[in-house]
Image (cartoon, rainbow, N blue to C red):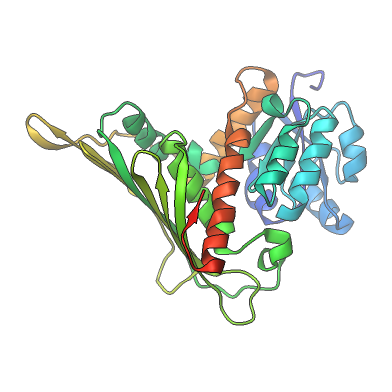
Length: 336
């Protein structure tokens, strides 16, 4: 850390997620100093570093990782570079927050976890877990107040927008389309709410427009141990006035949903709404979730919090993702 006690963080990759989320939040976070920005395009790195007033400016990745004064790295590069970036950063002794997915395959995640310190210094940026409303639902589920939770329906459907030929539309770079981009986040959220039960079998359908390498929509049905089911939808191509993101939880003694947050329980007096009143915030849920996530990461770097289990849990998540793509390709149910 710096002599002033600030956590010095570098950002690898100066694309959209770095510009919209990480750099705006980190550059204003108390006790944090954005030390440098790296990108394969030096001009982009210099431009973005100047825009956010990054003291160390733009630096090559190798030089940045060799700098012992830098405590932590946030990986925002295209998905196919995540595995190498994370392993290099861990070997350099850095704490690492990596945008999803941690690697393109479960085997890649397992390779990362063999690196010294991975369990203690690595976190995956699954920001949906840091939403206040999602945490409230998880609390109701984990406490048993909703009874036996047997069904979750989750989805993230984005409106149709003109899409360029970015790395997200290349299968070799992104690993997949709407499911890998949006669906994986809602799948992780559903599994996290249930405390990661064992997955048993999956059936998936993927829709891909002609000429595209990746799917623009996906739907799947995942059966878990204990006869629990997750029904998931994801799309980049919703023909509607606005995007839709949702989660519905059904239990034997109650139900919960978002957005908006609503919780109901069957009580001795009958069905009762028990939706908690969350503290009002000045930010939207998306921005607030990333701020909470980055604050937690900084606390891990400071030694004030243990690293969460998101990296280890990512192995199971990627195995399910791989099985979903195999199910869609082979048009059959896949046993995990």
